[in-house]
Structures are given as structure tokens and as C-alpha cells.
Image (cartoon, rainbow, N blue to C red; front, side, top):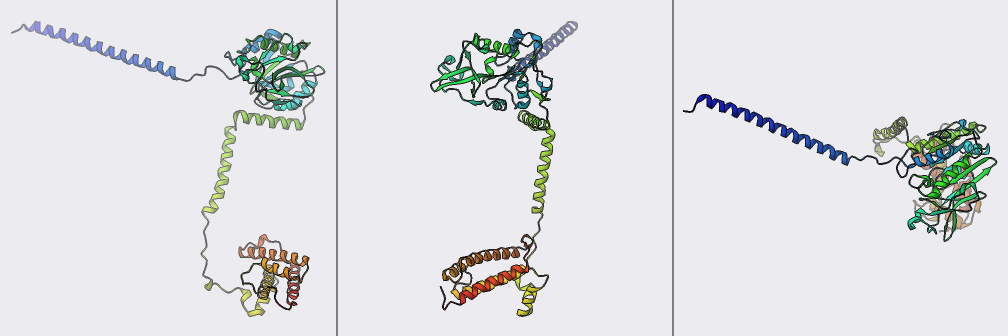
Length: 458
């Protein structure tokens, strides 16, 4: 027999080895799970869609379509404190010594304040191709037009990247500018303004940048805001043109500031001397329109609009879904109308009563006329009134005025008959005794003229 203490010692050693092995296996399992979790996190990060860049023309955007380099160019040209980038344009805070750059507005600008600002000596540069600058352009009789489909010069032979050239370099805005590379630009058609840059094509040239001077006030319109994007400022002509615009807007101004607003900026106030009730109302409507185009209806307005629509639909549906239809008693069980009781005398008394509806008396004349004439002409009892009038006209016994009066009378009688059958007599104009008498006279005149003929005219 084996030694018991030795056997128990081996068993203890075996238990320790098994415990260590189990702990190792558990640790390795935790490591495997940890590695799987890390791999899952890495895959999740890889497939999460993270925006790589900001919105186009973002004044702080560092990507290719941002405006940070343009803002830096303006500040290097004029000095940092003089250039103010803002999302809120307060017209009442502007002075004639200030300048303003509006890039790709998403709502119509306050044209009244803008016009007053320029007339007072302020200076504006509108950089817009397909934004909401039409109102401001239209106030100066400028319209957007397409560029030539095949420009003479284009970057990499791409017609969307047309090369714009200055008309002359004698102007401050085009000094040192050889060529400007555009990007999906819009042309500008105008009368009486100065063309700065143009794109030439087979059918002629189209302006891309124009300017206007009004005393000390100035307006510059450029049909392509993307020429000043970060990626486009690497071209010397684009960069020099941007610097010239900054100098042009603030030339001779020492205490003014250059404000830069982009895309969905907010407008408040009115420029000095332009405030009026009409102006405030128009500005409010323009701002509301811009807010709706930019952000849509606010939640509270959507809620109440949906509530009102739901109530209108409910009020329209309920009366129709809960309508009950009364059963119609068989005709043979209905009581005889009062006008049919008492024979001809009772019928005449019912029609001539003071409270009786005079439409019944008019219909009585209609029945008498049609019954008499259908029998006279040998027509079927269900012949239409149009055929009866045609036969009377063919006889030539009454003049054209009487025929037209007869046609109007029969139409009027048909309307009364329809309304009485539908129990809608309240929709008819009140019928007076004079109308009943006139109807009777016309019917008697026609019947007398027809019966004076020796035979039928069928």
C-alpha cells in the first residue's frame, strides 16, 4: 500500500495545480472577452458617421469650403478689431462709416434698410449665386442669368469652373487681378452699373461681378461666394480680389467696422431714417418667411395647426357619419295635400291664400302652358320645354322678345320646381304677387297667339 502522507501530499499538490490552472483559464477568458469588447468598440467607431467638415461658407470652418481663410484675409488687410463676424445684423447699429459683407443669404435681406444704408454712405458687398439675394439685387435692377455654357477659359476644361477676367484693371476692385477662378457661378445682368469681372463665351460675355457708387456709398455684387472659400483662395487672382473688396469697402474710413454675415443670419432693427410702420411690417414678414424657410414651422405652431385641422375634419365627419335617414311612407298612405282637397275651388283657395308660397301658383301656370301647348302641337306628354319653345318660335305668332321672355320664364319655373321638390325654398328669392300676375299674362298672351292659328304647326 502506498504511503498515505505521501499520497495526500500529492493530492494537495494536484489541487493547487488545478486551482492555478482554473484561475489561468478564467484570466484568459477575461482577456478574450476584453479583446472582443475592444474590437467591437473599434468597429463601432469606424462605422459611426462623423461629419468631416462644417457647413459651406462657415466663417470658422477649416475645411475646403469654409470661410476661415477669407476672414483671416480680411483681418490681415484691415486689422483684426475692424472686422466683426456676426450671426445677428442690427441695422440700427450701423453707421455710414461701416461696411457690410453678405455671403449666401438664406433669407431676403431688408432692402429698405440696405438702400438707406448705401444712400447714407454705407458700403455693401453681396456674395451670392443661388441664395436669397434676389430682393437686394432686384432693388438695383440686377437679375441673375446663366453663364455661357461653353466658356472660353475654364479650370481643367470644366465649364462649371469658368475663368472670369477683369474688364479693366484701372479700377480699385480689379487692380492686380489677372484671372479669378469661379465655381458654379451665376451671371448678373444689369443696366447702368459697372462690370468688374466677366466670363466670355461663344455667344458673348456675362458679368460675374459688378459695382455701383452712390456718393460715398458703394455696392458690390459678386455672383459666386465660393471664389473666397478656403480651397479657392490658393489662386492669386481670387485672393487679390478678396483683398481689393476689403479695401474698397473701407477706403477712407478710419472709425468704421466691416461686418460679415453668412447664410442664416438674423436681422433686427432698421437703419436710421428708414423706420416706418410699413417697413416694420414688411421686415417682420420677410424675417418670418426666412425663419420658415430655414427652420420650418415651430413646434407650438405645428401643434395648433394640427389641432385645428383635426377639429375641422372631425366637425365635417361627425354630422355625416351620425346622420339618420327617415323612412319614407308609401305614397298611397300619405295624406292628400291641402291644394288637392275641395276640388278646383279648394285648389284655387289653397294657392291664393295669404300664407301660401307663391311658387306653387307660378308652377300652376307652367303646367297649364305645357299641357296646352303639347296637346296643340301633338307632342308627347313628357316633351321638354325647349321643344315647346322651338315650336312656338317656328309658328312666328309672337316676336323675338316674347320668345326670350318665355325661355326665361320656363327656366325660372324649372328652378322653382326643383327647389320645391328638394324643400329648399328658402334659397329662392321671394316670389311676389306681381310676379305671379306677370307670369299669368305672358302665358295667356302666348296661348292666345298660338290658338289664333288655323291648324297645328307640328
